[in-house]
Amino acid sequence: GENVEQHPSTLSVQEGDSAVIKCTYSDSASNYFPWYKQELGKRPQLIIDIRSNVGEKKDQRIAVTLNKTAKHFSLHITETQPEDSAVYFCAASLQRNEKLTFGTGTRLTIIP
Amino acid sequence: NAGVTQTPKFQVLKTGQSMTLQCAQDMNHEYMSWYRQDPGMGLRLIHYSVGAGITDQGEVPNGYNVSRSTTEDFPLRLLSAAPSQTSVYFCASSYEGISGNTIYFGEGSWLTVV
Image (tube, rainbow over all chains, first blue to last red; front, side):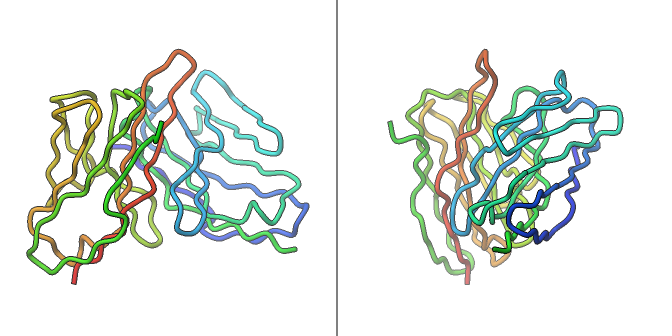
């Protein structure tokens, strides 16, 4: 089955700087890659996703890039703010996403 | 439109007891899933369903049963609770739309087995 690895497990960034979180996946058939943000005690919230026919997608301060050849995808957050502090999870699945495989998460801390 | 509703939010069980976590969605979504989340780990798929009457196992199905008699409901049953099943459980629903898929998670159920 699919295996998703996520790095780093913790990341501290000065407010205003950029943060990058990287994930690799094992199943070349995977074609849907969402990113979730989870605050303490809350449910995961989808922040951005990308499909295999797209190399990059951007939504304001958040962007995701995908390299299908290397089987890795990354989350980029620019101009970080204190409210960006949370745990971020990457995931991968086939088109029908009832079967998501998650990475182990990155705890992002924004230092004021 | 309540989205995905899970009950109970918190539960303490004794080893060997059984219980059912309830999940309901009012969005007419075809797909529903159960995940568990343990400290330091991502969410892991327990069971999933692609429609009423259809269920299948995920990554960590042992010790759990599910059924999908209606589109709206997808209960998760713990047959004989073990301390290893202490976890946070998330129910999710989604559909395959033209513009893409979005998974909606419930608020989670915190389960402690003593």
